[in-house]
Image 1 (cartoon, protein in one colour):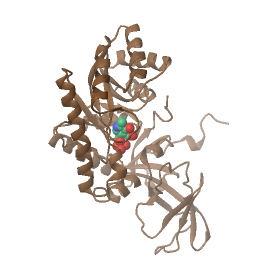
Image 2 (cartoon, helix red, strand yellow; image 1 turned 135 degrees about the horizontal axis):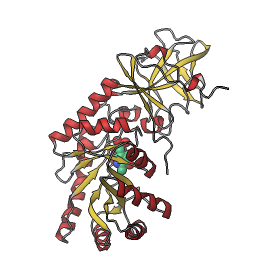
Image 3 (tube, protein in one colour; image 1 turned 60 degrees about the vertical axis):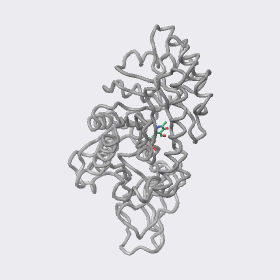
Image 4 (cartoon, protein in one colour; image 1 turned 45 degrees about the vertical axis):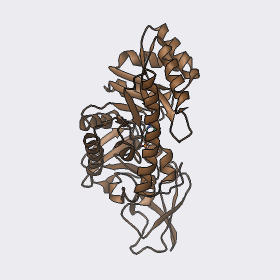
Length: 379
Ligand SMILES: Cc1ncc(COP(=O)(O)O)c(C=O)c1O
């Protein structure tokens, strides 16, 4: 066998989308750039920093591009493995929005912190504060830390109010840790709110409670330089609150079916830059066609199913690993074996992590080929 097989060859630049071997992950560059610009404009208008979460795409070139658009706001990673990939590829301002635990990981964290121009990590209790202090002291470095507070998601994060004050005091007592502020990730709003008014109401309510804690901290002489919030759906609602200094959305360049369903008033099909292009491989009956994109191509870790980007007359109804079932009983145009069908992806972060390459497309021509460099970097 030769070293490289034909399947390992990437599409040619300037090839037409019809020539791309399927299933393949596409990103429409005009749409992606417009989405990035939209959040950049929001951040500028509301005087907050846009620090993009790269867990969604795991590629340093896209991260550099986001940084250029936002005037150098830095990036956010969710794993140390992502931080390593981004650092190796020239990103030098990184916030890790995750609690790092375990000796090997702490060694890696301290090493990375020394290499980067700016780095901060996340803590929320003595179990992750004390070992971090020990690791930092062992290497004689001081680490910037953000205290995560629970504003309603009930995942990680110390409770607001007195518990948060006590934890900030514990951080301040550590000679090698520098308390920088709070992470107030408000993703609970996404499962609660149904209208624009409700997004606004619930985000404001979470930020009001965060502000009370900030005031409590400052009354104890603890300065809170930063308050970071999430996410694509909520950050434009939270980011108008005066307590917020930084927004950390991840999915916003691409969007997905989850965002479409949660916020039909903010996101339309034409805002969805990430798609999977598939081919019809079988049409066993008049009402059923099957495409070559199943659950190993389009992640269905959330309840949503793929949605055809350009056709409203067919429906993706079921998946096995390499097969996607289409209901074509209502189809107005023909669906035949060999046809290409493009789907908006159910959950973009988990879908990109299934692919080796993101194919950037403009006017139906391949313009960029990006490796998903931090794919599988879960450690
Ligand atoms: C702490 C934190 N911040 C920001 C984000 C980005 O949110 P989204 O993917 O909704 O843009 C995430 C996503 O999981 C997150 O966990």
